[in-house]
Image (tube, rainbow, N blue to C red; front, side, top):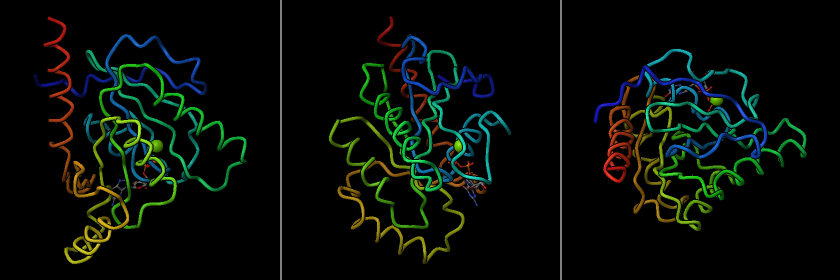
Length: 202
Ligand SMILES: Nc1nc2c(ncn2[C@@H]2O[C@H](COP(=O)(O)OP(=O)(O)O)[C@@H](O)[C@H]2O)c(=O)[nH]1
Ligand SMILES: [Mg+2]
């Protein structure tokens, strides 16, 4: 089924896990370090300029943002790892992310975003290991791939194999908002999930 991506609508932003709407749809979540390019990627998928707010100043949003489209909620998790916030605020973020991921909501997939240019941060590694340990289905998205030359890209790919355990077994999608690399692959994954849900509904 082709989804009509530009019909996606912002539902609401939630600062506390207890505020989340009832889990009445399947969900696809986006996780990653602040400034990794999460809002940009969401806008590309939905073919919109400003559905998710892109910021040159990282770390401002400490909310879970929901976007609705047909039978799916798209869930933008707060970007973690932003240094310049108080410890209590960091804990609130961690609680939000972990509270969400460990909930019994119908989370079908997590798109886990990592900046393709650098080694994953400690938080990235922790997050990836959490997804593996909890057997949460996820796809690793390597963002800003346009910023790497061909040889840099090859080097980073080789490095990721040692920096991320089980990298070779993961579904990895290089992504760029500039060249559109990866956009169609992400949409295909989303559509497959939407189709699965339709079939089980019948
Ligand atoms: N060159 C390039 N820049 C990107 C890409 N994705 C995001 N950016 C830039 O990275 C910065 C952070 O992006 P944003 O989407 O706000 O990150 P978020 O904090 O993860 O939501 C912005 O300046 C974006 O324009 C990409 O694929 N290529
Ligand atoms: Mg953002």
